[in-house]
Image 1 (cartoon, rainbow, N blue to C red):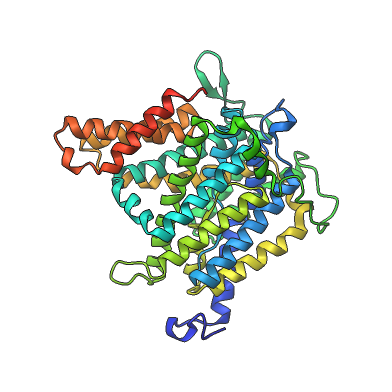
Image 2 (tube, one colour; image 1 turned 120 degrees about the horizontal axis):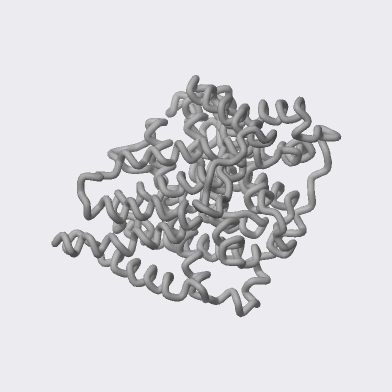
Length: 443
């Protein structure tokens, strides 16, 4: 084991890898609660049962997808990077695909599966790097920041801090309401711990919020700590039913598939480079075994969609584990082990409510919006498509719409500026695809 993971060459040992893997788990354990609540649209009332996924099944799918993805990354990619259903993409799945377009969740899972297959083929062929390099770096940063704002907006809404207002579309909610106060408390304690650099602050913040909720009778205490693992049957393999449904084959679904594929592209690339840099693994500004790492991600997403969850991606929270000493894929195996162990603690995790998870969404949004500082706002031809990408996501309640807006305006502003030679041919292809996406959006 030591030889396979090159412990001596990387100056690590079992203790450091275990501590690093456990730290990574604590930093991203919130996904075990946030993902089921998001995908089941638990905060949306009067939703037809046909559009609502089974909470227990999604919980199991989340834990299994995270465990399997992390195991593949650890054994094949040999990176101390854990995987799980991605934040942002799960919100896109729930609020744009299912709630916004009224598509059955089975169709959403099928779209995730198809995008993962394309991702795998692009990775194997080497085209993935070419496509990523064709898209200007400013738009990549804008997409990340836009998703951050979108997630934050969802968090504020779930907390009751921002509510519907017939006069102004949105407005400030009742800050004296019990659940809203609970969410504000959770946000406050999480921010304090994050500021102090506490590892796993998001997870601990949720735990303290749950305890506070129980003390003030806002959350019902669990009847037991350990219980049987919920059934995966309601979601396992459900995606394949979409392929026999003619309503699945629309231009809208094509746009959804492209969005899953596009966002997963950059989410993984950014995380891999960031964590590898932190761990000192970059060689001559290149990422060793990049193909293997991307292979792990695509396989994990394919399996995750079969289990019954949205796109699985590499987690930036893995940097917490690296900071604690993790340097090899063995740490990812440790993280996977804890995700498997969590399957037996469903009774505890199932009592977590939307006000408890809302602070996690807001904090993740804060971290993602930091990419705004990497955009050159002094160049108007860049500022316009970047700004439209960022602002359109939360205002339209659609990640896909924000991406489409930015990718349409980019070639327009660049051509008007006389910088046609700087536009990669692939960007023209994206222009056509997203114009068609808007034209046939209501199909």
